[in-house]
Length: 331
Image (cartoon, rainbow, N blue to C red; front, side, top):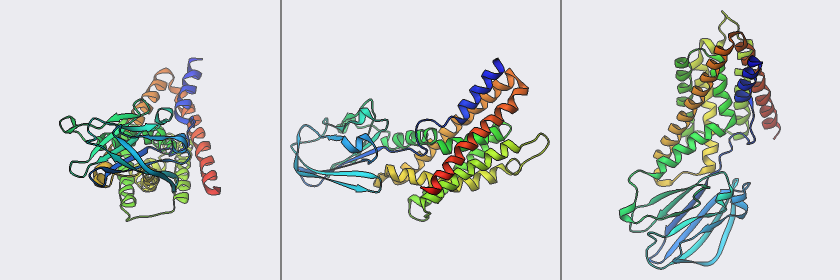
């Protein structure tokens, strides 16, 4: 009974598809820019498929009033809302936020750009949908851009199920924590290259076929796990860094598509890209550590039960990724 329970726990942890779609990363973005001594332009963006995008509203500073009608328009899969504000006095200490964010599961990045002062970056969360614009002496020394995009990178790898299953499959396939960590790092370097190249406009591939091939890469690893035999080394076991690097190049295009949905702060693009990648690497190492701990637990409870548990997890991962491949091919 204990052995069966351990196997079920491992399979559930490795193969459960979750309730969210792969690559579901849709943070909102708010930008408040001063255009004259008293006028400000307010632009905010949210996914058109989210409750926030459909019914959310911007919370404006108390010393500001709307001028004219707001404009709403679609841009890719997002809704952009543009408003003009007339404000009296300084915005220091005033509140800005998004009503409806507390009902969502995403965060929002806020940028406040006065004409004669440094730009400020704030982060909103469902628990804190409104924030105060700090005055000069209260402004944080650590960039909120770095914090926000690091957390977004961690959230993306943990919530983007296709990338998560790819990393878990590497954990199941390879032996030794150090080898897995090195291979995952090669995966990170590769997807960082294509992520940066795509974001900066140097590389481009159609998103739908890329997403389909990403699913196929997970199917490949699931097959490698299922066909692995003691004393025999599969292609992915002989050249794990090469396999991870090549597939990482493809996954980087997927990350770029997700990051395009977020938007990048124009004045902090290098910092945002760097910290997003750092967050992804942290998230991957968390997955690796958790996976290795579970495997060690199964091995300690029942060494003979480890292989069946890996096989069940591999079949689960393979079925899920095959479904994704077919879905993305016919979408």
